[in-house]
Amino acid sequence: MEGLTLREQFFPLHNISKVVQLFKYELEIGREPDLALLSIVVGSIENLLTCNRSNILSNEFDATTGNYNLPVMDYKIIDALYKKFHATIKGYVDMSQFTNIKFATRELVKRVSDVIWNSLTRSYYKDRAHLQSLYSYLTGNKLDCFGVAFAVVAACQVLGFSDVHLALSEDHAWVLFGENSSETAEVTWHGKGNEDKRGQSVNCGIASKCWLYLNGFSVRCNRYMEVAALISAINPSLNVNNDAIEVALLQQELLWLLYDMGHISTYPMAIGNLADLEEINPSQGRPACTSLFQEAILAARTHYKNMHVYPYTYQGGYFYRHNMYKEAFKSWASASDVLKQYNYTRDDEEIYKEVMEIANELIPHIIKVVSSQRTSSILKDPECFAYLLQFYDGICQWEEDSQTPVLHIGWAKPLVNTISKFDFDVRGQVVILENDLSNEDYENTYNVKQNVTRFRSDKLPFGNNTDSISNFIVNNSKEYLKNEMDSRNLHPDIRELTAACGEKLLNRDFLIQGGGEPFIGGSEILNVCSSINNENDLLETVYETSRHPKIIFSSEKMKGLKNLLLGEKLNTHAISLQLTAQSQVQVGGSKKSVFRDPLESTITIRSKRSRRE
Image (cartoon, rainbow, N blue to C red; front, side, top):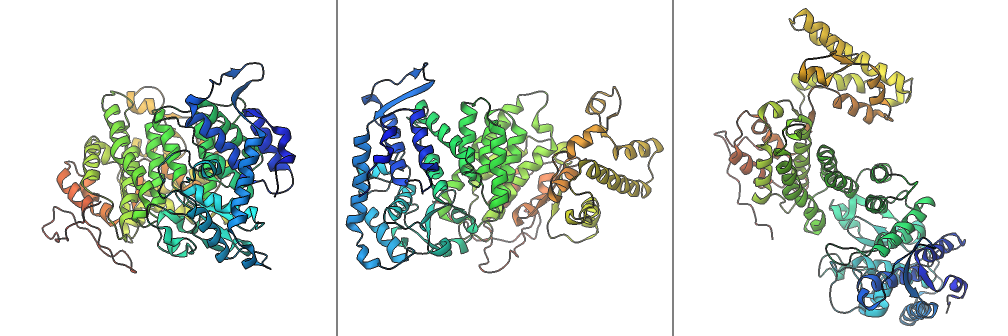
């Protein structure tokens, strides 16, 4: 049985710096970091400073060392718990049944999960805090669903199987095993009563297209990322309103350690957690939290085909807290765009609650706040209205082809109240398109897009050169505007002004107050293009600098609401009926049901919508 003799030099652990040194040693020693040891250490600190805080002395900041003092972690206590875990796993897993195997088998993984599972108290602790570490398991026989999965991986490491690793979605965990980690197995529960899934593959969950399994684009951890998962799972909360500052600072320092080593570059949620901590307590000389939020989004797009929702909701939450409401709308719309790639199931309760909070609490609060403002209100911004519609279109698309409905009257009321705050002249500026249009109007509306896509990024001779891209946008815009003007009988002054719009940006003060020059310098075009890296960014830039924001509806419900949403007078009752109508599910087929305007005389009668539990 291996003890902790080599790590005894770091004990006693009495401040954050000592704990960071221990983690750094484990990450740099040249062998796999010891998951059991690290979980016991951080778990003991977290529990003593949160669950049992009243039983320890007050820990004040030590000005001489620049560290927050922690409860003293004695070597003997940590070593005893460590040996207990080794003895439990090796004592209950009969390795004589698994001889001459190089990689773990499904039977072995199932046996290990049985050992962990059967030693827990007979209760579910999904929503309880501070139960994710081996310290909780060894001292109270309690683990949450993540803790069970982590314990199984740590146990397999104790048994000498280095091929067993964690796989993480945004609300679930399972294990990978076998050569090249090609096999998957459930080892924990999600919700209640699903323990019978342990040992089974997750392929059925992936095939169902539910968010819980991220369509197969989960975070596949190595040992270092498993350490990152352990640290990300730290919960510094004392209660609903207060955190233990020492625990939060420890988590922040450990995440920066992993960040500097490059171990969380492909772990969007860990980067998002670090961004949240930096928002509360910025570190000197470190990237700003806004950069970290964007980095988490980039990681999700680059490594996981943009299948992760939380990077956008993390960013949207930051914008909301800092009263950057338009930016929050945009982030939430992007989150909804990700969500439309899934089919809703009851296993997706966490993201359901997240989206419902945004729709029914955060957005109505924003509207209430800005309604009292006289100037610079987002209610006068057509792009904000477009983001709002994009957000709901994603939710409606999420509902389509799902066995369980999403939207009910509780969703409809906040939406119609929000829409009613946007005047007709604002709503009327939004151009709503449908992704299955093929008529002449579609071709005309997408003239600019077709001109751009005709020159794909892999064929552009100038690559990512911003000067060339700027000229490309200007030239194509001028050609498009010239064709438009030639087809209309416009006043010469208007022709001249419109033609110049293709070369320069309009002066906002001139448009609002009528004074000054009509255009600002052409240098802004270069600023707009400075961040263009690929074809999609190029297209997005063209759209965002156009006169009217354009959105494409994917869901049948929102297509049916198009005329109602842009009408001069809003029929809120009709919008509510359309939004809450039961989606027609056609299992195994395409979405063929077409929703009609509720005001039309040919409206069809739909079956009564089942009540959400």
